[in-house]
Image 1 (cartoon, rainbow, N blue to C red):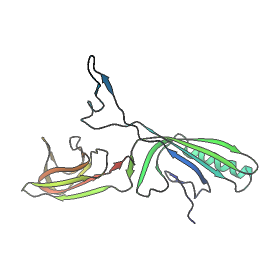
Image 2 (cartoon, rainbow, N blue to C red):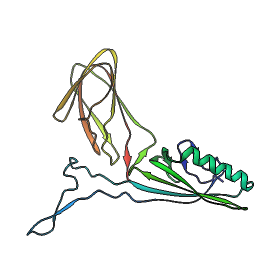
Image 3 (cartoon, helix red, strand yellow):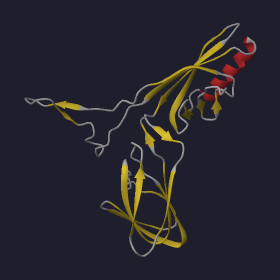
Image 4 (tube, rainbow, N blue to C red):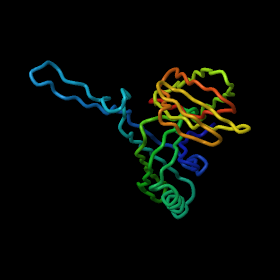
Length: 222
């Protein structure tokens, strides 16, 4: 039988002998802001007024309880100290049970609950970013020609992302267009802030010479 586990960075709780007793991840809470209308009904919803219409979310709280009863008290204490020294205060990618496709990211805190003559327990908490990130990146490769072409970049998540752009080839020269913005690129790696891929389909125009590799990671709330 496969032992249920949580992975904190490279620390696999099952591989280190811990039993996952309980875990809970709080819900993602939108950052809302409402301003009362003096003399009017209801209020103004200003939640996305400064974010180009994109909703922002607060941190999420992860709480994990781990137990073990192997060995004696001294050996269990050594394993607890090892976990604290390895993980406490670190920011790590975290893989949760029952979701092999996504991970979360948070800063960890490890607390020894008890270590008696029979068994031991620790609690690991993490203040996490609100998003569940795909374990695999989306990679799109385009080959430019002198004739302008259109690439439809699909963001299947909820988080708007700026992709990494890598230009390669024999003396490449690319002209990209997105919305009302354009940029000329030669060999190298770039982040173009104007290329914000919102959820759904995004049209990128490109022309010139060379190849363009576009890499981004989708993220969802649940």
